[in-house]
Image (cartoon, rainbow, N blue to C red; front, top):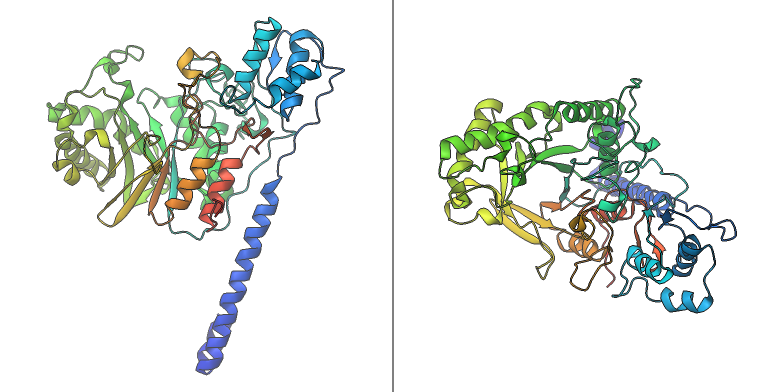
Length: 486
């Protein structure tokens, strides 16, 4: 305030000079903050010491995460298979093939080596890092673009069907045994999933939300199937949000709804979910869809956590080919919006899957649209501008081999889509800088391998990448940095 009063009394030239100086000082301060952020996170995690080959023995369970370099990996695995260090010819023959079209992943080469050794492997994935560090929220943002991601919470760790190491080809703390970083703060010792990557654990929600702010995400869209809105998970979510507010309210990520329609018609969740809503029955279907997900979700979520676009909560509506006569959804959606406005006093902002774009009327009923699977697009992302808002959507990683094989590891084939590295994410972050909103699919779908969240075994180009590697790219992009080489 004192600086402001002095400026008012100064002559115009002096005021201008002071103003320029202040701007330059602030820019220098911002640059220092950004430089410190990058220095902190560049080598934030430290790998454990190299495996001692003399002490490594023949094992009944085979750790795929020992050894950073291809040669060290091969030696550690062969010693576990046979009790012997492999000959140099074997190491040389296979080292150059890790990361190739023949063996694109560690698991692919591991399976080949097991066959050569005549072993039926039983895989495990240890954390190669000394500790899982606490990550600080991003402190700087230069781009106006808001970035969010689809957030999954269907995990059943440490067991199947949606948990355990075999189901995923990237692994996170808390998948198989409780991890301290996912512990709940509660003194209640009766939290059955405490420390596990599981939606009944408040520590799961808290840590993932804090990590998303480290990435510089503005929002997450929670993937709701319907049956997952059970009391235990909702209560854990609310506890995680409460802890965030208490510790650092300004860095609490905002949340929207991803309505995943896959559950309709499935036999595993009770009679209600066995039905397939018919969009020709507008009154009945709009009520069923609204009351099963939209209403309970936003009723359970405190308004201060709603992600808003022009003051309206964001909803993504996904197609799983389960709604009958979906070409009539343009009649169902307005009725659902009216119900929402009646109950919450505001009309939601709804982006629909492009599969619902049968008629021009959908452009009036919805607020935007998205294309879920973008690997078949030349640009690797889809964008639409409507009513002055540009929404871009992209899927930047993929490895669903194990998920599609009964949650059992198998070697990838040339027909499998494998996108493990950061090439697409870098390109999409650069190319969508002018978008108002960018949605990434996904934050943490471990089974399909599309996640960009904390993982302890990101590996390509013959070395481990930091557990926050993809998060770091987002925060760098949001701070204004171009990520692709000229």
